[in-house]
Length: 191
Image 1 (cartoon, helix red, strand yellow):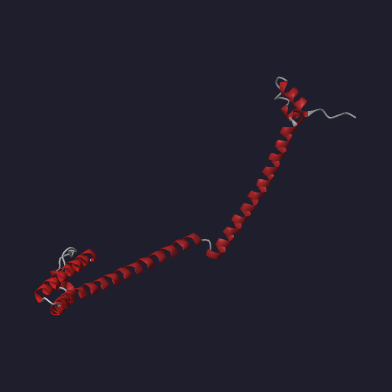
Image 2 (cartoon, helix red, strand yellow):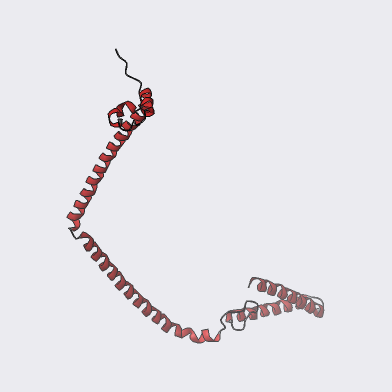
């Protein structure tokens, strides 16, 4: 039995021969090493697999085109463009109607704001926060009068109950002033 020659040896001999390209077509099997043969085989198998994948993709694209033609017809893209234009026109019309409605609503608001324009024109743009305008606010004016009435009542009751009326009056007055300053400072601090 004759053993098959080693491909690596025959490949090295073939490449070392001068003008080996002329005989290359006849000796291609002898000049290929085992690693080159396995690489060529793998490449061919992968190429055939890719060929099958490409054919299946072509079939899928063709099926999609046929499906699109059955749904939209041959002029489907023109029909879609017309539908998009029609939808765009309806949206523009709705936008115009909404803008008109907003203008009408703003006019109603402006007419109703005229009732308050007299008060708004008399007040400054920003109210000061350091000075209390309590005379303008009737609630604070009423509370101030109630506070003064309470303070006078407390001074009167303390003066009547004290042994020395003049000393009791001065003690109650000084206590009322301190009490007023304390609550004014609290009011000033929080408001």
